[in-house]
Length: 293
Image (cartoon, rainbow, N blue to C red):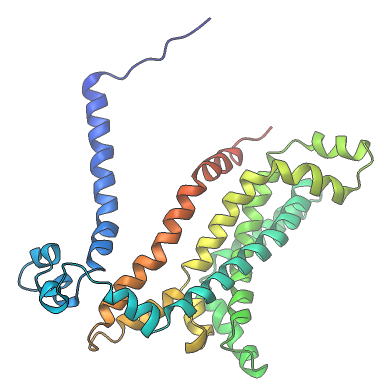
């Protein structure tokens, strides 16, 4: 028997639509304003005379002959070699995501299929470790890194970020594995697969939405990190977020603020594209982890 979909009353539909539109404008405005301002000179974007200068680009026209300029991007990417920080960020984020998912998937699967009474306490210990402020873990790593003469290099930040992120991936992937019926494992074992073959060829393809969701959160943690990378990396090996902070830390130098604005836009655009590309996977992954059976 077919059931007709109930329509919202017109006033409620108008109110909900208006609320969504207003929320989108408020949420998108800061980023849109930053993108617009990144093509202006500092005297316009941070004008104390009138904020309309940031719209029309009065000083930008006077200095460059055009209402828009790419001087901020050139200064950030070429003059200050921001491309090196972008490359460092790619290395750190990809490494942290891959290592966290590899160990998290193995550990989460083992705990989800284990009947041991110690499983609960292992997960609780991981939760306590994740609840600790990351800065406390960084301070514990500093001394051995200095003694081993490895401070300032990318692997040091990767090790610490994996240690911070691993409990989260373990918990999240554990919940996803619990949502997968154990009958799949048993059927694969009956067909002659080993436990690892069942995990690799049967369970992991089903786990793809959960892996994408967890991997994206792991990626964002490493991509947006400031405390760990700022304390454990040398000036030559910084990632993008600490480098942006270094631009803002020297506002007395002409142009540095606009370098920071251009760098912020450059660092945000990849995240926007990534979320838009994986939005369906993210939603299906989150909903899959909430259903057991």
